[in-house]
Image 1 (cartoon, rainbow, N blue to C red):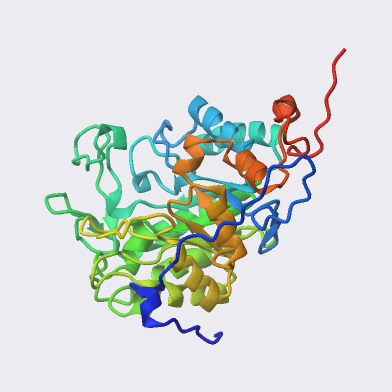
Image 2 (cartoon, rainbow, N blue to C red):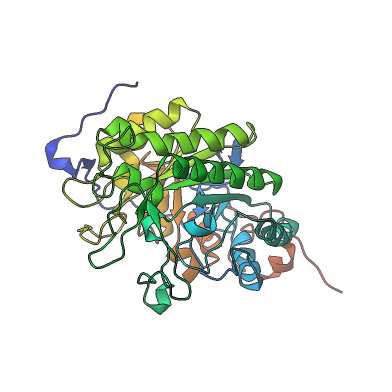
Length: 406
């Protein structure tokens, strides 16, 4: 285990180093673009090489039919595939039907799911070199919910779109909700096998990497957090026991996914609730995953309890990624209100993380990487159909762009 870095008490909050405001690295617009931008340097995640350090975060769309993507996913993932980012991570994808957050969640548990996703991936690959990964997950006790635009509440068992949920313990996510069923030995085996089966499908689809969803209050996070896990067997109680099932799932996925493609995990570094999962547990889990071949850690926070008191602000989660990077030594992906190119550049240049992950900012501006490259004096790969859109003042913005007309 590498030597731990110590931080002065004045520079800490909730166990993570307190982050100062981002250091700007202004770059003047120029027609000659020889980029020194750190954000647009290649990144190695295990055996996978990304063209730059910008990642499109997985974002649930609640628009599938029995887990199978349709035209919306073709439009949604198609536009993000030509964003210029180095990697696109497909939204949280359920490994079994009962593991969906809503009845309209994406899944990878049936032949129909696999065929539907193949159609979307084939279209994206035909027009973009972006690396394509998928986030595999299980909602646990947060399953059987309505879509956010329908209120997001739990759907009672017996109503359309409702079904019994599963978790580490029969503890509801929020007061008044129907409690989940506790997974017994057979249930744990079923879920592990479902993750492995989905990973095999991901391999057949040619996906470049798998991110396991161990965050935001979903099943693997529920096992990690003492707020949700009240078991008294080998899967509950001590930190080692609470980490056991997420590690078993990682091992099962790593064992069946090709060795030349990376597997990593997204982790909530804190529950933002006293007595919950915290940064020290995150570091312990990250070390354990590293020893088993985990290629990176995607660091986020929260989601397991409605009592969370998040200290919201620009870049508010970056200090957690910084500490994981410093103390574990794995590539880290930072996320959380990173909206401006100068912020992202400062994070990478300062060694606080190895990549940045954008979600809402990318939905609002699907050409965010183009605009970042323009601001930072870098180049970005763009489909030739769009080369003529290159602004006059940025003559070398689009890599390899040439065009003419009669």
